[in-house]
Figure 1 (cartoon, rainbow, N blue to C red):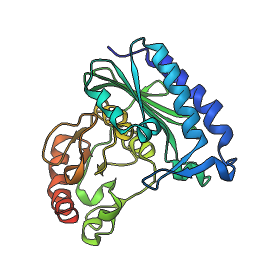
Figure 2: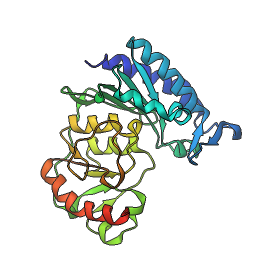
Figure 3: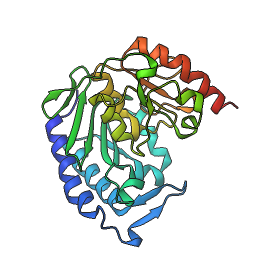
Amino acid sequence: MAPDIDAVSAIIRDVAAEEIMPRFRALADDHVWHKSGGSIVTVADEASEARLEDALCALVPGSVALGEEATERDPGAVERLSEAAPVWIIDPVDGTANFAAGEPRFGVIVAYAVGGETVAGWILDPNGDRLATGEKGGGAWKDGERLSVRGAGSLSEMEGSLPGRMRRIAPLKARFAGIHATGCVAFEYLALVEGALDFAFYRRLKPWDHAAGQLIHTESGGHSRALDGTAYRPGSAGGAQGLLLAPDAGTWDRLAEVIAPAARETWRG
């Protein structure tokens, strides 16, 4: 059973308003540093994740949190996804590099998983005041309106998102009307369910990046699978199989025929 969708939405909005937006374009030099892998983190990431953890776990007694920044300190925390307690999966600032650079394409992503399966998800764009929500079996919504992916045409009419290395394959890019990169997965999932993008392929499948968006996309009528046809679950390994999201199963098949060989070639061995 999913938690109260509106109560979680209010918590996310409050944390964004109080911990993230006051720091946007106001970061001091010592408010930004690099993780062990080289990616950027800021005081806003740390502060908003702590607030979200406390508020969300209080909302559902017995639940636990899996936050991106906490997992950087304790990689073993991902094992919580296979345990019995419900898990809040939190990306406190998705698109941190954009945020730190003063670029408004960043968001907050929260998912709620039970038994290793996502049952609810939220994606907030604080600058655009867009909040998409999804509940398993209950549809996906934004501003009181039900979300629906747009119908697909031919591949040459489609616009989508691909990993950086695949964007450099000119013959692959030429198959589509446009390939876009935002530096923010939250924005790309919003674009998929608002009809601005037709498809996306992701290789790195960190649960805080994809658990909420994949559910919202599914509840908007979309179809997604790894390239080997297996269903997505939070904690999926990704790799060359990745995650391909499309408007429907038939379009997924057509996209996979083009994208799968390119992915295998890009990451062979």
